[in-house]
Length: 82
Image 1 (cartoon, one colour):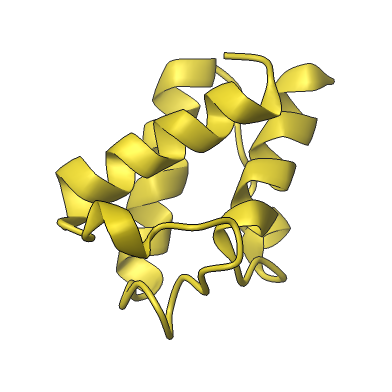
Image 2 (tube, one colour):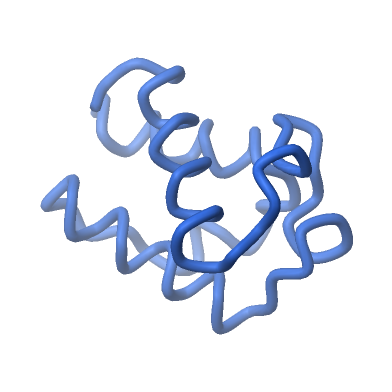
């Protein structure tokens, strides 16, 4: 899971499976809280899920500035690529 596309696909799948977000609502520009109706607990669950796959510690503070699906992809991609 190293390309941005891989990260996006994984995130897309999690949003659909774990949070029951309609697949057609998930776009790079979709805002997590306003458009996809996630809350802060969901965001933490998502971080934990990515930690499990990547085996890397993902500091929650890193995600304070995250607003859109693409922001999440960017953060995760940066962390797994470093």
